[in-house]
Image 1 (tube, rainbow, N blue to C red):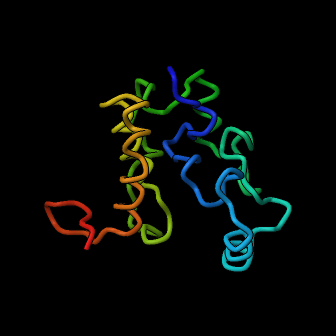
Image 2: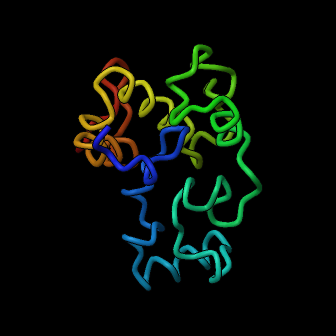
Length: 142
């Protein structure tokens, strides 16, 4: 595998594209996230899920991270139970949490491979966060 898996969370989050990751964060972004999400300054910048050992930004230990590690997996899509109940979409908080984004990323990784997914990842992120939902078409950029 040529991709640096340390910059991709087991659940499919693309830490290397995140605005809070240590390679991407700006002082302006740091200030905005400290104020809007009340993230303590000492928790920024983020080293990513793997770099923070499943506790990015000071959150409690992630059960998905632990599950993948206990099974000796790099990514959840490698599991014979994927997709398990941890990845079932839920309407509650869907406007704030990127849960279905992770599931889509994992499915793409499994289908096209990690290196190809990395090439697509920024476009996927833009469509997810800036696209408008069109029934039957997925996210459309205007």
